[in-house]
Image (cartoon, rainbow, N blue to C red; front, side, top):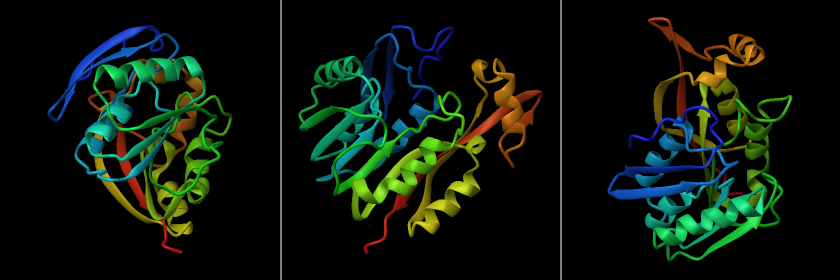
Length: 234
């Protein structure tokens, strides 16, 4: 998939047209919603390569609905899609409808893991990190892992995207501490986006994270990986 690379304000209104596998997508991204970046794109490509046949799937932070469309097309039985704002969900619903998604999809306003549900087969997420809005940048990664057992059934799985800047070894260790088996489903290097270097404090933080990035021909690169964690049966 070759997405349109955002320029300027990544939260301005935008249309994105691209393909994922054999899916042709044309998404409306409203103002205030992040356009799918490399993280969302790699996660989308990975989800398209998997089967969710007959599964109940919870997506935390559905954004414009990109991943929800793919989950439906790959066989999900039902979807629960969350977002922090009802207007974002309204636009996500428009994108689902315009792509003829027939899978029952419940849309719920919720703040990250503050969702009063349980027993889902799979949880999908693109945790914020660079622009997390939290002093502790790993907040969304750590809470996802620590609270997954409340949202996902025993033996179910979580699938999420992660950057080397977020300290992958720490994530693997935390997942294993929670009894999960861990797989990396996909990984790929990408050059830094402009807004990384626009934040000097962020760059200083990342320099302290072991293996957070590489520099090739003067260009900073991060490695993104799609993690799958399978929860213990008991």
